[in-house]
Each structure stands twice: as structure tokens, then as C-alpha cells.
Amino acid sequence: MRIGSAKQSYAADTALFDSTTQRVWMATLLFALVAFPFVVDDYWLYLACLVAINIASTIGLNVLTGYTGLVSLGQAAFMGLGAYTVAILQIRFGTPMLVNLLAGGGVAMLAGLVVGLPSLRVKGLYLAIATIAAGVLAHFVFSHFTQLTGGSGGLNIPPAQIFGVELDDSFKLYWVIMPVTVLMLLGVANLFRTRIGRAFIAIRDRDISAEVLGIALLPYKLLSFAISSFYAGVAGGLFAYFFRAVTPESFPLLMSIFFLACVIVGGMGSVLGSILGAVFMTLVPEILKLVVGWLPLGDNALLFLSPVRTIVFGVLIVFFLIFEPHGLAEVWRRIRRFFALWPFKT
Image (tube, rainbow, N blue to C red; front, side, top):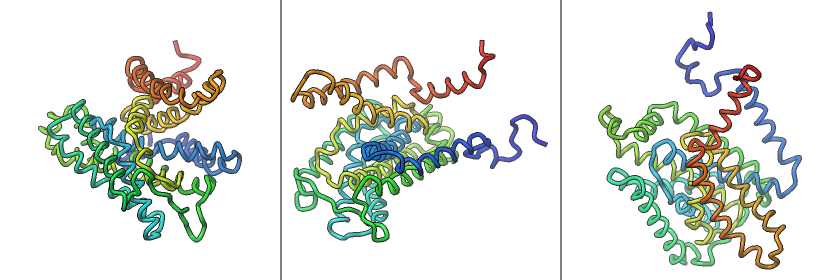
């Protein structure tokens, strides 16, 4: 006999969805994702695909920064490695899309292992600077290995094909980008129910104590870098197929700052936070475009938008660090608790 909310087995206690309500909401969400492309126009489909790509990269960075406590400003570089790998394979060999995505993730993962080597000796600001150096090196490679990367002009990518169908618009790409992102989210959600994920959290909370308890710091830190970079590489591959062009300027340092902002604003160490942060931060530039469009700036609107967007990202990071360090995920949890207790909440 089940008493209260007690679980009768370890499997039940570790179930990803442990209540009927959660299962119903998840089924409703999946139904909404399936119906979405049939009820919206091309602009919203474009935004949905872009949000999904950003979620995939954000959840990868959250594995490293939010769950393991290792700050990285090289996410854009890893995305670039994945994007260029996909572009080269698609242009030169015409290999299948899913194979290219896995290859892009693999190349980024190998680079992440190399970048992660200093993580045993340095952390915090010093590690962030090391990852910035990796981004600078990646930009140099993208710009100067012209025979492979096309130099400053970049590469134009032909549409991918699946079962003979060309994925040449947002509607068709949605059916690849969204399922891949959902699978990546489920992968991370289950990762932190395993020994590996709990080791990441222990390293984040107190790395010296974790080492005393028998957790080998360097292998687990490298594994965290590898997983994060793999996710970034796959997201970069989706980015390449979505925009069908990659250049060195497609992956600037500002993009890495953007993903770090997504993690902080959404909530570090939270899968839900990664989703909320990526959605919110992706929509911020669109809102800024509307606001700037209302201002009497004329032809200078686009010149005004870029620095304003950078300032807004910085302000949001500082605001959430000071006033809501647990991000939008904590705001959502408070709303749920309020309505769970209403009207008896005092």
C-alpha cells in the first residue's frame, strides 16, 4: 500500500516524470510542438528553430557551468567547429545529415577535451580567459585555412536531404531541429540521475571534498567539457543547416556571452532554466528590434541596435546575479508553489 508520496522502489524514486500530472503536461507539450508548425507563419517558425538551436547549446553550457561549476566563454568556438565540420562534410562528401551532426559534435568534443586540460589547475576567471583564448584560436583557423574553410567568405551549404526530401525551409528543418533538441534535453535530464551527473554536482559544490570522497577531478572535468562541447558542436551543425552559410563572423565572442547570459538568466544547474533562459534571451533581440523600429532613427536603426543589444545582455546578467541568482527557473517554481497553496497561502 502506498502511503502519501513515498516511493516503493528506487526506479520509482528516480523516475523522470513521477506523477500523472507531469506526464499529462509533457504529453500536452509534445502535442503543442507537433501542432505548432501548422498554425504559425514563417517568422514564428524561424524563431522556433532558432530557439531550439539556442536551447541545445545552452543546455550543453549549463552542464559545464551550471552543474560542474566551470566557467566557459568558448561555446561559440565549439559551435563553429561543429558548423564547419558539417559544412565541409556536406559540401565535399554529401554524407547524411545525422552523420554530419554527430561528426560535428565529435570534432567539437575533441577540442573541448583539449581546452579542458587546464581546468584542474585553474578555475573561475582564469578558466574563462583560457576558453576565450580557444575562441580566438578557432577564429584564426576559420579565417586563415582558406582551402578548407573558405576564409573570410565562409562556406555556403546546400540543403540537407532526408529520404530524398530537401530540407530547404524552416518548416521542413523544424522536424529535424526540434526532435534533436528534445532528445538532447532528455539526455541531460537523465545524466544527472546517474553517478556521472552527481559527480559533476559534487565538483561544483566543493571540489576538494569531492576528491576526498574518491571522485577523480580531472577525468570528470574533462568529461563535462566533452559533453558540453559535443552539445555545442551539434547545435553548431544545426545552425549551419538552418542558415546554410557559415563564416568566421558567425561565431563571435558575443555569442559565447549570449549563451552564458542564457544560463545565468534561466538558472544555473537547471534543465528548465536552460529552456527558459534560451527562449527569453532569444526573444530579447526581437523585442529590441521592435522598440528600435518605433524610434525616429531612420537608417541608423541597425547601427544603434548592435551596441544596445550588448548593453542589454550585460544588464540582464548583472540584474539576475544580484536580484534572482537562481534565474527564471526559480521564478517559475515560486509561481507553482503559490498556486499550489492558494488561497490558503498566508
